[in-house]
Length: 527
View 1 (cartoon, rainbow, N blue to C red):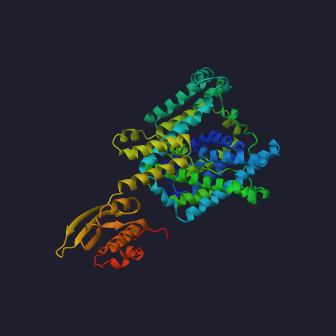
View 2: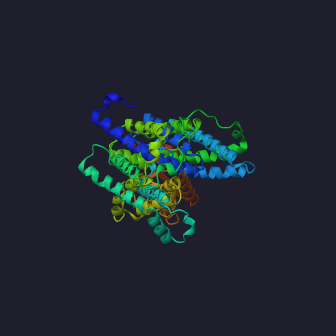
View 3: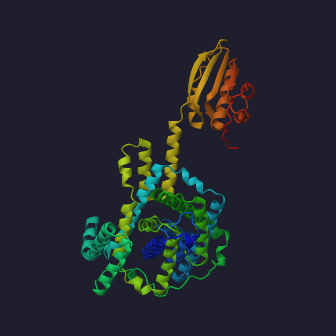
């Protein structure tokens, strides 16, 4: 938790003002993601408050914003479809209640999975994500943030228009005031910091433009048009229905909970890495896993949906000066206060202001420097960057990152799948193969091609001093080669293998010599 004594007056002011800006920006996001998941906006708002509050106090990165997110909400869509198919006899209201309870229980279990991962200190595995994949994630998410704003600008009865040009034309004619407000908001956020950074530019844009549109009765889409927030109360404890604790229900819930847990952790840990690069101070992945797990479990127990870190709001907070835990704490607490006690004020905020803020976040999030680096990157890294970006936009964040890791791993294996042998003859006429390079599953073929068993002399030495046996496939290759020399009636001696490698060998064990300078590396096995 934060220690208020370590805060300067300037830091307190920056954190509170930045948190206020973020709290307002969280409202339409939470509402929109609730609609995606197929539940009441209150579910997303509760999730944003509870998850945001707990991660603010105990998370691995001060100032990082967490709440209901689109990447997690999309996973709940499939859950809702499964529930509808499972209960075809239920009416609309009963079915909505059933879907809600499935989401709540799924959120609780997902949180427990994340908590377990954090306690086992597995958050460090985010380091396996290569830099090109991280660039791809950031760029893809920046595009997703921008695309998520487009539905707010869609014309009424959009299905009657054919072709994107017709849709754009109708949007411009119907929502021209929204476009004007978006441009004014983006201009304010771009130019105001050049004159003064005393108050976050986004907060100024919200206050000024809201007052102007309200006092002048300008007809534009407002937050109140998205959902009725008049009856929102403080979250209360709620247990999932007992009927969900059956094998049939759990067969649906558990796989979704696992996906929610992994998607949430990947997005949170990658967001943490992005903020680490922006701020220079390193956060704790394991603490973030634990805090997110506790937050999601608590959210599910109090009527909220699961979520994770929000890179858009986190960047808003960071660039507005909110670098401490007080900023994210303020955002969470002020969010629930606004929707419970000041819902009428929130309702008159123009949606276009928030869209403009998110467009600026999208621009600020995109790594434009990566476009220049592509020219100088190895082709494999450039390929990973582009693939991860495309999959993030079209499919899913978790799939994109996993694909990036797999592609990078395969490229690494391919590039290191070469082992060379230098041959010489010692004073006793024995042929010596001096190997160089790693011996593992990908280099076994290259290893076997180095030896001329048929034409080799009666005594052969293989020296592994400059090589390294990496896995059981390498050890198996040595055993197979030993058998071939044995069947050819030739004496083979193996030098400079680690003690661990010698234990792994079966056929070749008796042919190993023991040197004083034998290496001490371990061999990875699947045992």
